[in-house]
Image 1 (cartoon, rainbow, N blue to C red):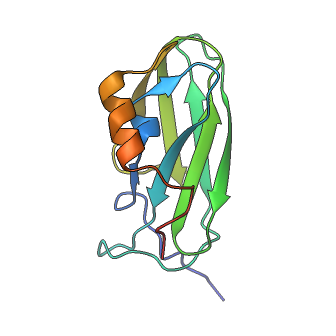
Image 2: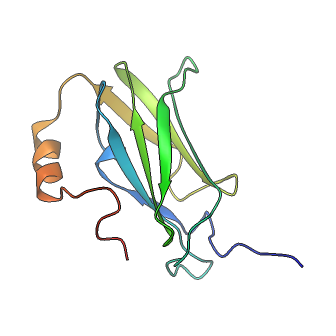
Length: 129
């Protein structure tokens, strides 16, 4: 029996403040919504996702992927130095839409991004059906 995954990398998307801004030493979160080949949302978990935050010199930041078992995942990561980083999000070893993403890590937050974060603040996985 061959099992074909319903989640397709080219249709799956990432969102969240963690794509816009990361503060040195503080956790940042990116939400990944897996989608099928028609672009519809996947409703189950267990997809094979990988995430990597890299500096130009090749060092890698720590992070964890949380599976909400409903087609939605959060990648929570922390970077310990300032600079330009690359965030690669892969589904079944294929980059998702927009990946790799460029990240700018700073020591202090951008006030506009922080206001947006406060307006949309929620616990990881909340609002995921």
